[in-house]
Length: 135
Image (cartoon, rainbow, N blue to C red; front, side, top):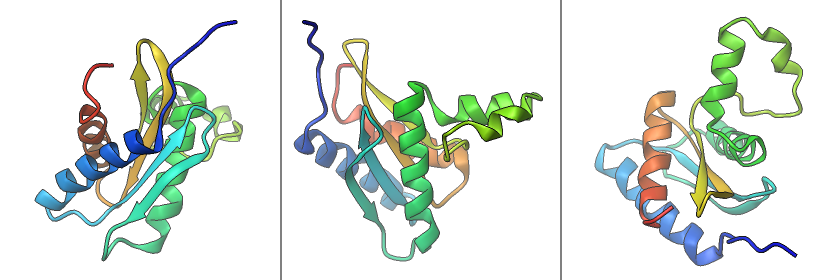
């Protein structure tokens, strides 16, 4: 039997707190979603002023990064580079802003952010993940 690390609710709270602090320091109103390695919600939060749609998009980006085992931007890039059939893949967050959480080489989940420019969403997600240290 193999063992692997797994994301805890406490881990998700640390990530969300750091990600929210990063966004708030720039006055960005965003939704932040943290999913486990199966793409299921562990924690979701929508900042005051963030559009309701951003909560759905943050979940989609996070789930895509968890299940796809890579940043959601990789899928966006594939489509933009001509592999348009990929839009039929069973993933819904094919835009930048979903970042996997790697611990000891294992994807234990992901962070999805929505509400500002996609590159800024990813920046917020990475700032949250950095709060875990290691990886």
